[in-house]
Image (cartoon, rainbow, N blue to C red; front, side, top):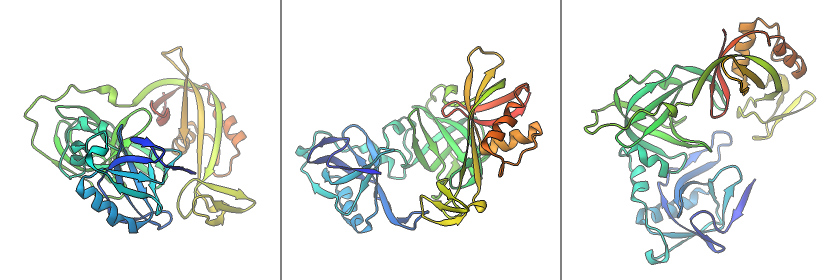
Length: 360
């Protein structure tokens, strides 16, 4: 559910939000519903945020306001419960303001990030999540490739790269066909990387639908910042499984592929797109929470074993289980049968999700 707002971050009060508008996108169609929308960046007083509008008829008005670089007061908008994203509705009202009616200036740095020209890596901390930007950086650290399961692409390849320029180090995540496309210590011009913002970090992602290119470019004339290895969030250790906290299975919709299917008897209904389907045809995904004892530490670690890694776990341990039909109780017992075995765990220490597992 989203919440109705008269004001939000920025110069906000009961009568609206003072802001500037940037980067009005073209009208697009949502993948799951074919609903038309466009997005933009709203610059408030404290930080920029992404805004989505499902009323394409408002695009011309917002684009004109953005082009003038004039401040506006925004009223009657919504804000999602799970993110800072603003939702602009057909009832949202935009009122132009005079420059002396707003307490903060138009951000040239934010405007530059939407121009298509490369920006400094240090500027990423002042941008809105989901922005598409162009940067220049040296590929200073390149990880191995791992397989992960995503909501839209199923099982796909992922690779992490640390890039740097004279101002900052930033992590770039390459997905799918873009893995192994960079060479270590080469400088590139990256076009259409997406800014991702989590509770713990900001990083850059190759986009799922937009075009992305990485072209070798001239090296920097000034010294680069020192390489920050701790930008990489991958950790590895050897240890054994102490126990299973929880094992849960979800079903994915055969239409929109979201894991939001409720089952009643043999009928399954997707809560995201309302598609009714046969439950046995829905792909199943497991998530298992483990308590693990590292060999060289007295502190236990809680890790998440995702569905594709659970399949590998079953294969390397020789467990005779069918993941499509096994019950949660029996799956827990089969994992506990392996508590005497030693494993090498590789995991993302932000979400504590296992990205690779093998027998020691």
